[in-house]
Image 1 (spheres, rainbow, N blue to C red):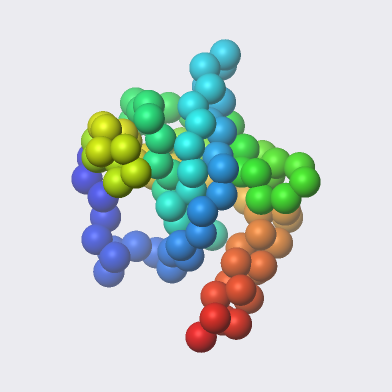
Image 2: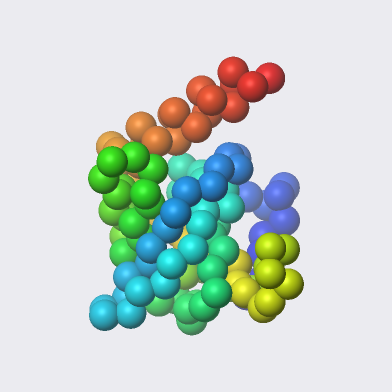
Length: 116
């Protein structure tokens, strides 16, 4: 599955980097967020997941991680800028947008507005 173009997306993306852990059973994939939206997020990591896999997403944006349920919607192989080694970017659709995630989005939007 390819990445949707910006004009095809339903919700605006907000670029923000947070540590992210993806949990699939006993498997753990660590990485960093690329962007956040009200319906999902993108992340970069050293490992990949298969499309359609249901996962738990932990975003470390404060003292305690924000835990979300989601599904892998896209994945592409990339070259990491910091090490020039292969890596992956993945997009997740969030199936349960809890109050902590909404609060995080509001904080990110406020920070971006203040930078203008």
